[in-house]
Image (cartoon, rainbow, N blue to C red; front, side, top):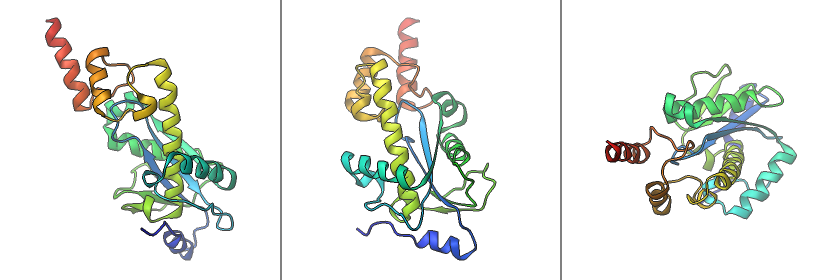
Length: 210
């Protein structure tokens, strides 16, 4: 499979844009933890090697790329909390995290390449949605790496506070071990109550107490 290239960035530059941010998120599918987004403006003269969709990379390759991106690019990170996910829904919370990531850039982007098929409604700059963008666009791939590594580190920290759920290994995704731990240990404040597997356990707990 071909690595991401700069075709989308070049098309944006041809329209007169110069600060083009790739934007992606990590953590839409887990049952626990925040959703994290990153915005990355690559320097065309210093694009790190090895950029790829973070899901196609191993841990060490992601960590190396993460360090190279921070050393050579402009990076912003944003997140939406579990409470915001439950209040808004995961799509809107993901878009909110993307908006916050763009706002956190040290310099303002003048164009955004958004992974997915929808553009966050709160954006104030021109943008293009790119389906599968983390495997196609270098800047979106870079954002996917930053978002993934950042979120994984958050989940490792949360695992120390709430041992037994394996968040340092499963990052909050609904593995069999994670689901079993929820039944045996209960639901934590970092579980997404609006997600069906968590909601089901909470309802079972209520019925057992009544």
